[in-house]
Amino acid sequence: MAEKVLESHVVRGTVRPGKFIVARVDRLMVHEVLGSRVIPLLDRMGVTRVWDPEDIVVVNDHWAPAPDIRSAVIHRRNRQFVSEHGIPHFFDVGKGICHQVLPEAGLARPGELIVGCDSHTNTYGAFNAFATGLAATDSAVIIATGKCWFRVPESIRVEIEGEFPEMVTSKDLILRVIGELGTDGANYMAVEFHGGLVDRMSVASRMTTCNMSVEAGAKTAMMGVNDAVREWLKRRAPGADWDAVEPDEDAEYYRVMRIDLSEEELGPMVAGPYLPTNVRPVSVYEGIRIDQAFLGSCTNGRLEDIALAAQVMEGHRVHRSVRFIVTPASREVYLEALRAGYIEALTEAGAVVTNPTCGACVGGHLGVLAGNEVCISTSNRNFRGRMGDRESQVYLASPATVAASAVTGKITDPRSVV
Amino acid sequence: MRDLHVLRGRVWLFGDNVDTDQIIPGRYLTILDYSEMARHAMEPLRPDFASEVRRGDIILAGRDFGSGSSREEAPMVLRELGISCVIAETFSRIFFRNAINVGLPAFALHYSAPLVAEGAELEVHPEKGYAVVVETGEPLEFEPLPPFLMGLLRAGGAVEKFVADGGMDWEAIEEGTD
Ligand code: SF4
Image (cartoon, rainbow over all chains, first blue to last red; front, side, top):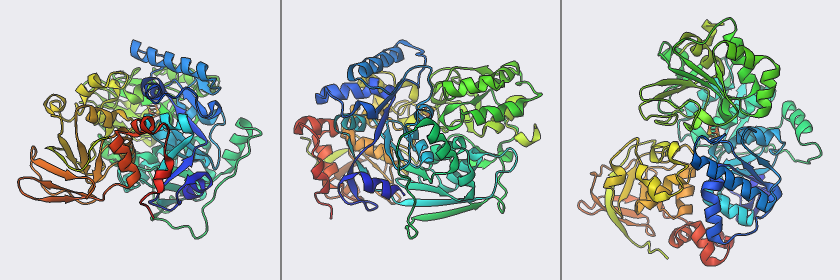
């Protein structure tokens, strides 16, 4: 699948795994890195005109609203850049996290080659795009030329059949997958997700799955188009024409992994510090006392995640020694959660609901951890110091497990709370 | 043009899975000045690193060096501190890409690194694809980088190459590859 997208975008070189090629990109996403790093590089390069304002998407989301002067300056630079170059797709403070707002705006479509100056750009694979993360220098070169160099990846095929058991989600599934692959098990590779369960998955769950593939090193993750995606695109990208890619019958894979949830019993999974691939069944970590529970991020800050947390919290209160922070992934998600009554229910139960932002996930603001504090989080990384002090500890889990833990004050199997 | 025939420096040893949050924690990313940011390089792992490191020093690391965030600041702070190259058993994809893009040579061994003492003097031959521990003669071998990437490194990174060539010379990508 990945090779097919590269094939339709290549301008130089031969698309074969391991080869270096140059390809044109359909879209570039840049966030605060534009203001902090890319603009100075463009100045150095003498670039005064961008390749195509329509295909550059700018988001102010990591430190939003600005918690300090430095971020405020970066945000202002982004605003100036956008107005100078007439960039129509600009999502300012409050709109939400990049990986949520691009798909919401219909800017992630099948068969596209999308790059973003953020490692979780893989998320758009849920929409059958070849999407990958890179950084400031690449972004500057793309802004100037619309092109980028790539190493053509090998592919790993993951087949998933069966149904999710009660209180088990796509987060538990992807933790299970990356736990098996290890931090570099998919390094440089494209991970394809296939199978009945992937076909039936909601858009949000597909995004969660593709999002965390990067934690196993994946360059990109891709899924075929399903009904939920078709429905989504009809509503959000009406009139856009796109061509879905499917793997060839005889496609070659570096590795094939099969997971059948009707045979294998999948329960809630938790990744312990300090690696997202340090994954164990929740029972291994059960009972560890927590100071903070965080529900949010581009991995699990969507409506179905907040709904699940609200369901788990029903009839319970947030434990008195826990801060339960809920950060919707976008304004749209926030409004839907508000209308559905989740925001009210969670707030009444003692949660702190923040504006949409990356916030606590990046250790930037709205939930930074002190030394030795323990947090259970729906986000995607638990590296040392990720969410605050280097002596703090982060456990990664599903929204259900995070909400259940917020209730009891310790890491808890959600099935024992509901 | 940077001369990449031979690089020589003292070794700093790091283990497996050194992620970008160790190389430069997220909260320092809003610092605009790289020399100021570089003072926090490797802070969670080795708080003394930034103050003790000398120009020319070499990082020798285990598997999956630079995993995690796409932040280019990670190779940038190492370059800023004068690290002449990073040798690792393997690199995380984005770190490798960024390192080349910012002009920090990065060489992957693809096997378990031999025991090398911290502080040992290493001589690296990027074009020939090997390094030796000066005192013991112990070799470390790696695949040389394709000419296109070496070109970026010699120029001091993709931006410098763009400036020198007045644009991006994409044709070079096919040179030396079959
Ligand atoms: S929510 Fe976290 S992982 Fe996602 S883009 Fe923001 S900082 Fe990165």
